[in-house]
Image 1 (tube, rainbow, N blue to C red):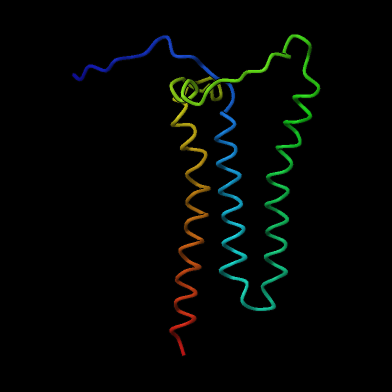
Image 2: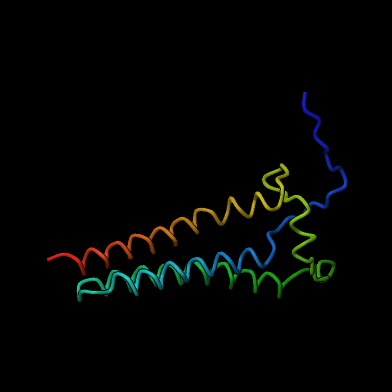
Length: 136
């Protein structure tokens, strides 16, 4: 049997670190920009791109606005700011639905689909441009 060290005294956090949310927003912006830059070549594409951009804008702004409202209307006992460094956060665990998950694994689980979509759309757009310029 393999022996694995189990860290019993790791801190448990209830929220993702703000840098993870910033990275997620950056990946959404990457997705929108790559769609506009690489696929806006015809007049019929502008309206669908505008609708997708509006949907992504709402998907980013709604949680941000709700978090700002939540922070403003906290109970007096919950007024302390939890400013945890990213190094401390990534060394701990994250409480997920009554269970515990290593913080970095939770961050990867959240960011991997966004990164796959953003980078995949960029790759497809580059191939699309290469085919458009080399075709008849």
